[in-house]
Image 1: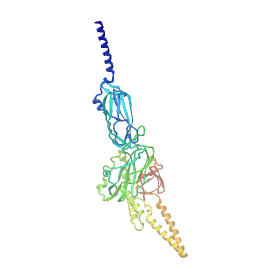
Image 2: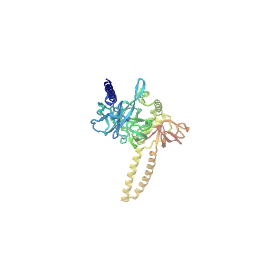
Image 3: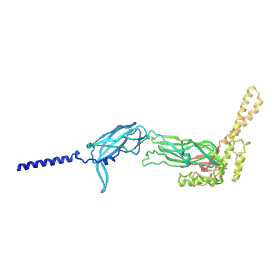
Length: 465
């Protein structure tokens, strides 16, 4: 009886040991719930994914060890290749009723390479965890061009909504050449802007209203796929007909570290005139400055008064005077009447480019005659023509020097002794006055008015072409 009891005790002890071994084995590990596994996703570990780069994706699974997980990658879409995978033990933070706790688990990391940009849908990854089969899908994946090879891109957004329709031709109905076209230049795929410059268009007013710095991350190297505003411009065509957007160039540094010069895309405009009504004279564009900050709107509104219709009229008349014959055209007479109406002194007439061309043609004809007379031996006539030729050549040289002078119409205001707003020279120039541009430095121009010299803002000086 005693022996029998001893045998039963040994059997119970053996069953207890086997139970402990079974309970501690992976076969008895608590199975992962399907609802938990269903919500898992492979997520990208970088902010932005690029072509020709090893892009990583990861998922974390609680309460499993790396050696209990087997990974199987299914067939991948075209232009996608699997590089490698990794499993590692991690502490996973969980929010519970008792607060934040950490549990052990496994992080799975996959590396893939993409050769083309666009959106990709990757088939779920097959996982075997402690004998259970699961599929872990990917979140949506967007691949961008590798910054090392991408070039900066420019775009234009107009304050007039219909201009942003994408159509190549844009029609502007000018009210006495008073309509202003305001637009913003935007850039993407650029790390830094070095410079912004442009060719001043003929028969128009053009100025930089505001320059905007690119947004940067703390490291200064974040990739931005959306266009960022860099400058706001104001353009005012002064004559009707077909014209194109002024040429604007941007010197920018790409994400690959290369400095590139890029040009703003061109747009075709058709400028059509229409009569100005009294209501329109006082009417302003309700949305022209809607995208510019409050301070900029105030400053731009002040510019409208300084560049009045009377000043624009003088610019147009002087431009017309320069491109007409003085003894045929009445542009000089109309210009003088307009200046007298503003109380301006009798300014110098515009040198006629058309007259210079005519003079050069006459000089060329005389030169041909001199050569002909020299060939036939008529020296008496050739002497007279030589004198006429010399006088004409000197006259043409003087006239050409006058035309090459940078003459401009000033919108009015005070000259500065140095290029600084707070320093006054005590000389005020009436609006519509003609000045000579000596040199330019940044946003300032050094001008001559009568016998006075000083600095003014370049945006208030309109070159006569």
